[in-house]
Every structure is written in C-alpha cells, then in structure tokens.
Image: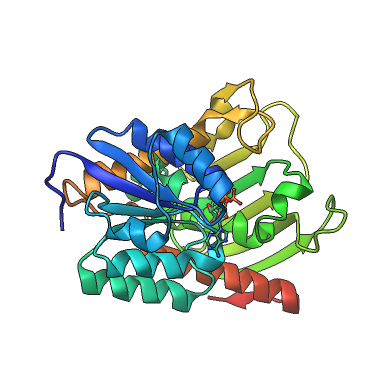
Length: 326
Ligand SMILES: NC(=O)c1ccc[n+]([C@@H]2O[C@H](COP(=O)([O-])OP(=O)(O)OC[C@H]3O[C@@H](n4cnc5c(N)ncnc54)[C@H](O)[C@@H]3O)[C@@H](O)[C@H]2O)c1
C-alpha cells in the first residue's frame, strides 16, 4: 500500500534519546513531516514537542487516530514495542519499530501477522544496513567479487556509563541485535554459535557489559561478534564500530571512525556521524523508497526473527557453556 499524498505524516510513540536522531531524520526527508509525539512522562513530552516543533498528544490512542499521521515510529523500550506496534497497525498506520524489535520470536511473528493482515509495512529499526558502504559490501559478496567468503567480523566498543546502560538490557540483546542483522544482510545466517559474556565496569547493574560470539556460517566461513559498553578503544584505527568481510578475492571494512565530530553525541563521548547518518538513510528508505515507491525494506521482520533466534541461541550458549545449533 503506497502513500500518494504530498506530505507523509509521522508520529513518535516514545521521545527518549533515539527520538532526537529520528526527528532530525524526518526533518531532512523530502515530503515528510513530524506531526506529533506521545511520551509516557509529560515533562519530557512537552520538552521534546517544543524542541521538534510538533504536537504533544495526550495518549498513544489519540496519536494513532490522527488522520494526519500515516506512519508511527515506535521508539519506546523493548518491552512495549509489540503493544504500540499493534495499536498503530489496528489504526491502519505503517510502523518503524526500533531494535530489538521484540522480546521474543513470538512477539515479532505477531507483528508480522498483523502487518500482513492490514497490508501495512512494519520496518525494523535496523539502521546500520542503510549505509552505502554496507550496501556495496553486500553487492560485492552477492556478485562473487570477494571470492569465497572466509570470515566476517562485527566489533563494537563504546563506553556507556552505568546510569545510561541501566535503561537498556545487557549488551547481548541491546547491541548484538545490531551485529546479527548486519551479518544476515552481508553474508547470511549462522548454523552454529557459541558465546561468552562478562561484567567488567558496572558497579551495581547485574547485566553484562561485554559479550563475544563465534559462529560457523552455512557456507563454512567463520564469524565473530564483540559488543562492549565496558571501554572505548582509543588506539590507532580503533574498533569503535568496525565491520569486516574477508574473502579469498578481496575484503571490505566499515568504520564509525571515518567521520567524527569533536562534541558529545547523545551518550557517546564524541559524535560518530555515521550513527545519525544511518538513521537518516533508514528513515528516507522507509518514507520515500518503501511507502511512496513500494520498495521492500533492506532488512525485514523475517531478519528480525532470525536475529532474535541468534540472540536467544547466544543466551542459551552462555547459560549452558555450549555450542548451539541454529
Ligand atoms: N538503532 C539504534 O542504534 C538505537 C540506539 C539507541 C536506542 N535504540 C532503541 O530505541 C528504543 C528507545 O531507546 P532510547 O535510547 O531512546 O531510550 P530512552 O530511555 O532514552 O527512552 C525510552 C522512552 O520510552 C519510554 N518508555 C519506556 N517504557 C515504556 C512503556 N512501557 N510504555 C511507554 N513508554 C515507555 C520512556 O518513558 C522513554 O521516554 C529502545 O528500543 C532502544 O533499543 C536504538
């Protein structure tokens, strides 16, 4: 179902940190407008509505019922993603839902069924795949230009203070979800994995601040993930966010360090321009390519389901100290 009216109206459910990036992305997207937001806490709702120059709805029901809203961005915590996605779909609205999309495979499958029943788009907030360097890597892999793929690495080392980390699950769910959909997009799914985690810098928060995963992919290649909130990497050519694919005939890399602004970026010590940039590309892909021109998201709810299976397999591996078959 494509949108033909002049302006695509967007409504935000949730106005936390990530809404700042989405507001800028909508403002920069041609033919789109942020109509309004709803946030559970009214202080923040008023502040962000003033900052973004949009309405402040009294309830999420009022937001989804507004005919000026065509697309709802679900930007709340993981535990409430299904509730607000279902509410928006029932009102006939398309949805962008932040990652991790759901707390379980069953939740994401429920979103998929509801979207199909209403002929509506639910796009997961899998922002990293909307970077041009990621798309080029996928083209090279698909075209066979890198030869036989032998390995893939997704590394993330960004210090998060404990106060910030407490708002999220541990890094397995919060960060390895990004790694999982990136791997699926670039080189495909793993057939087995094993994982480890540790808590190295939190004083009170009991969740992990570092986790690593080793995988065997369907074609026999090996892959590695690292996700850490425990420390920044300050060395030369740092692995702040680094993605590598290595094949027998070539290799590629994506790095957050290609564009850095010397000012704090939300909870990061510096501004990694790619973070905002990837959200801008993602939002433009949904609002223009998908909803105006009928394209399919580069990463779908099926990918979110597979990513969730990978996360649950990593949790099982950590729990049982085992290698898990997917
Ligand atoms: N794509 C990315 O790179 C990226 C980065 C950061 C966060 N996220 C995701 O975005 C979402 C929000 O993260 P954030 O950093 O903005 O967090 P945040 O803590 O800054 O904001 C979360 C907002 O959700 C609201 N909220 C929490 N539970 C709720 C509930 N049950 N019902 C209604 N509202 C509720 C809070 O009031 C708050 O305003 C999370 O799912 C997170 O994983 C994605």
